[in-house]
Image (cartoon, rainbow, N blue to C red; front, top):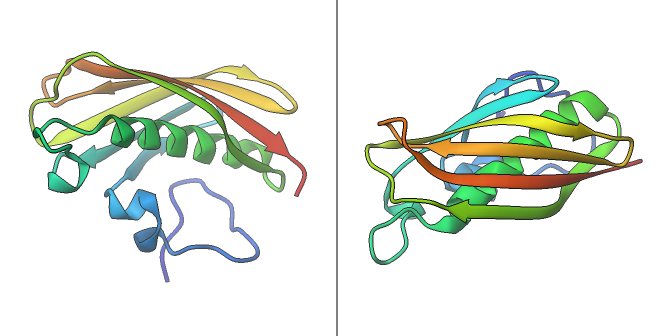
Length: 139
């Protein structure tokens, strides 16, 4: 049985195993999960690179959306949360073996939450920034 990320409530119904969904395939890890902050990371390996060797932009965007969704669900459960929009800008190529993302909630509304997430490499250089809007709905 796969363990839930730090602070996540149990989910009832059909759940895709972490190892089999995008988050697991790309090696995403949740490091911190709070009411208004979140942190996570992924290893820089071939599975997250595009063909020229750089970290694929989709990996940054997917990590940002996963972190924003997980942190929102932690607060709004048993309501559900899902990505509504994701704007990720890529600033520079990453160095090292990990990308770390840290986010904060900018808006916590009844039906939408907005998160800003900074992605840094091992040298602490800002590599990408994301603004993710999460929809919150009744189950």
